[in-house]
Length: 412
Ligand SMILES: NC(=O)c1ccc[n+]([C@@H]2O[C@H](COP(=O)([O-])OP(=O)(O)OC[C@H]3O[C@@H](n4cnc5c(N)ncnc54)[C@H](OP(=O)(O)O)[C@@H]3O)[C@@H](O)[C@H]2O)c1
Image (tube, rainbow, N blue to C red):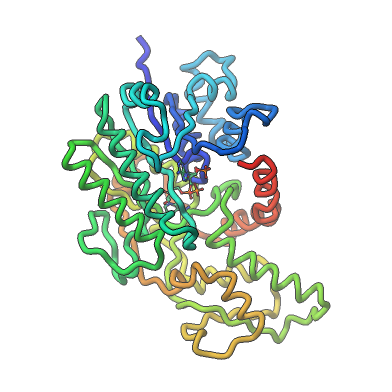
């Protein structure tokens, strides 16, 4: 008799990482319950249906050759005529709720039913921006939301709990960070880091005292797919490149075409390691680890074992943007000096990432490499070719502007 795959509840599946994980779980034959944030607006107005819209957001154009290939592998276990659409609609149930509400915003009966059928919880939802918007948004979603998910895991059927943390729970430390529980609270760069630290600690304490098998994943800074460049987030690396790209274009437009003698100073330590990890590596690694029994009670750094230095990234980007003659100098003490209008603009637009340009963190990823050693999954090196793929995608998708406009029009 064919073995039935487990039912996994995924939060954050409409997001960048959650959608990549959902795609992989789906093509590997898992049955999924996706807890999607409830919308205030009347979604019945959307003619092609809410579920289709969610499907588009999750599968999108990131449903690439890799996934198609994986799908063919599991396809043999399904009827060969089953289309991807059918696979989605037959193996995925969408549940509208809110992780910040007790009982996840669900009716009692629905909550109880879900508690009794789900065997794994993959908790990926979070507020991920660094700005303070509203009093307690980070604590509310990232900490109280995680607490609600833990209570869910502790009700009904026994469940495994997978929690997506971040490598940056390490805050402002300046040493090698190992894949173990962080005992002392470090200084943090922002409320996002603090809330993720508190939530991670909560997961470990709650799971230990309630005998919930847990696994924690700590990704580095996630960028687009290493083969296609596909991404739905255009922050971190993209923001810096976009600002430089715009500065170059405005010089060209104003016909001050001679970029030869222009030097722009940007803040940072040239030797800072920027831990960029492509989304396909992060999602592939997590899905392999998630299926292992040995990963219970462990923490995994899903980070780049060979991250580029800030000055190397600068050189790659300058070559790529073909900014001949425009010099970008990385200056450790920039803020103490008087700045040109362009430098002020650069600083203003990248302010929320400022502290990461001075980070002294290095991440040990022995646990992850141990699991991945015979899988062929390796973190791609940040070469000129890879950065080109990433930036080409961003430029050809106008840094995500079109998608943002579509989503705004649909009010989703
Ligand atoms: N991106 C990175 O570089 C990075 C690095 C390290 C760790 N991480 C961690 O990875 C996880 C995913 O990050 P991401 O980059 O994929 O973030 P993202 O694109 O911003 O997605 C966040 C997801 O959380 C959902 N969500 C937010 N509030 C919710 C609520 N109250 N109820 C239900 N769902 C809610 C969002 O739903 P909506 O679609 O409704 O907004 C979305 O699906 C997070 O835990 C983050 O801390 C990310």
